Every structure is written in structure tokens, then in C-alpha cells.
Image 1 (cartoon, rainbow, N blue to C red):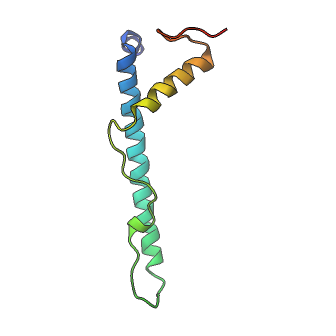
Image 2 (image 1 turned 90 degrees about the horizontal axis):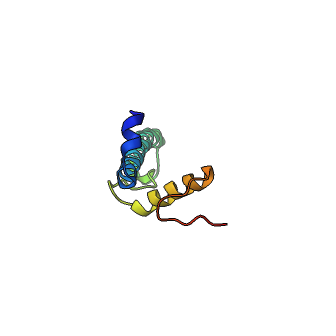
Image 3 (image 1 turned 135 degrees about the vertical axis):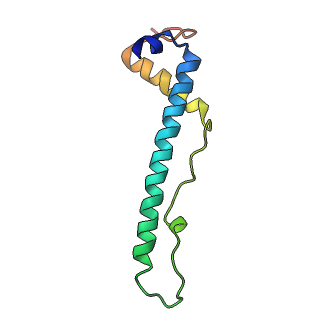
Length: 96
């Protein structure tokens, strides 16, 4: 609830953002994998001289997401959001 979020400390909110980002990345990777399988299936319907079939991994350009991989980007994202709305985070001096 909103009350629970208001009571959270900044590190807890950062962990929450990291988890949401991981879940979104996992969903995006799953969708990309499904599409890669479809593309490989379509590509395999076209005969080639080598007779070699295509694999879904040939159509994927990214690696699967890793939990807790990039913590610095979340901190930067929070600082950027705070700047946009004019909030000064604890420990930061307001620039004039």
C-alpha cells in the first residue's frame, strides 16, 4: 500500500526498484525468446544449400537477465527522477 511505501527507507525502495526492473527484464527476455523460436521456425521452412537449420539463439541479441546485476543504474535512476520533480535527496546538497 502507499502507507507501506512511505515508511520504507531509501535502500528498501532501491531494492524494490531493482526487483521490478528484474521482473520486467525477465518478461521481455521471455517474449524475445518466443519470437526467436517463431523466427527460427519460419527461417527453417526455406531450404538452403547447406541444409543447416536455424536455432532460436541465432535471433537473440541479449543475455538472460541476472538478479542484482546493475545496482548503480537504479541509484542514478532514482536521483534522476528526484531531480525532475525538484526533490532533494538526503545527503545531497541542493545546487543553486
